[in-house]
Length: 385
Image (cartoon, rainbow, N blue to C red; front, side, top):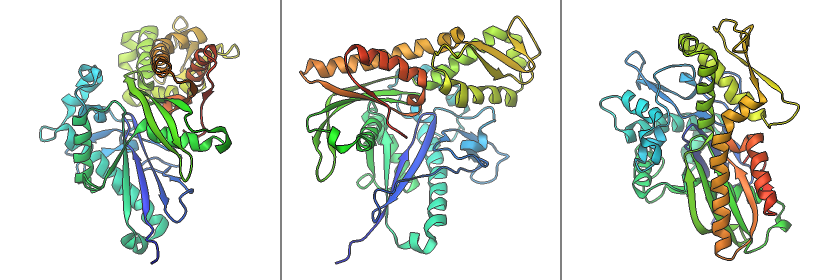
């Protein structure tokens, strides 16, 4: 009997950004990541903002999402965290703003459902464009959805409720996978097979936009496929890269003055924040060659004292450390505590795997490496992790 092939679609529904990847079972090693998004222009990016905006002025379905609302104000952000009231940051002002913007007829799970509906619709359009509608009509599609390691059972239930409403599967067929486990399996596969041994233990630092998840896995099998098991309880914290963004905004407000900051036009402010997010935050490494950074601040008048000249704000290396360090300290502490947990059960940590969007920060990598070096533990930052 001929094997029935299918499509496997993985959805990373994130706090600040989301992504989708897919593979066909006939070519399982060919993993394809969606890089083109509605209103994304010509740029290719693995992730789309996890943002929504409702308006009576919009045509059906009455909301826009992702890059469609990139430069908009009064948009809903961090909607994922609304599913888990147990998170420490639930009273955070960002979430309070999002809750205040919820349409009166919408619960948090309804908003997540709307976002996932738009994400699935675009995914299906991409797949139909690749394979054709006839092929898609006869090919089974199985969806996998990632969730934080520290997600409560109630939050998992709401995630399943939203996913089921969208048509990603039923509670019995939809696969929920912890984000760090998914990252660990992928990352370990990128390491040369002869470097892995059964009983090797890895700490995964999954550093995202809102959350940082720490979890440790022991390799239990290499053939016929790589298998891991959780060996100590995972931990997590609200110290993702968005907190660096927020500290940047607060620093700019202090530097140029509240009056100037508040008078800046929304689109100009969005441009400033995007430059920090997509460029400055990623290249900063606290290197001696990086004395001064320049960030565009459209609409801000020249102010030599504040370091504003010709529409650019000068940011020193010391300033960047001030913006980053409190968040970096929290991440380093979580990693250190997770390593100690593994050592407390008598196991040796083979390596720390740094993954997730925030994991692309050169400064975070440098700080974590310094800590790992003190304990003689290799820090690995796998490609595309």
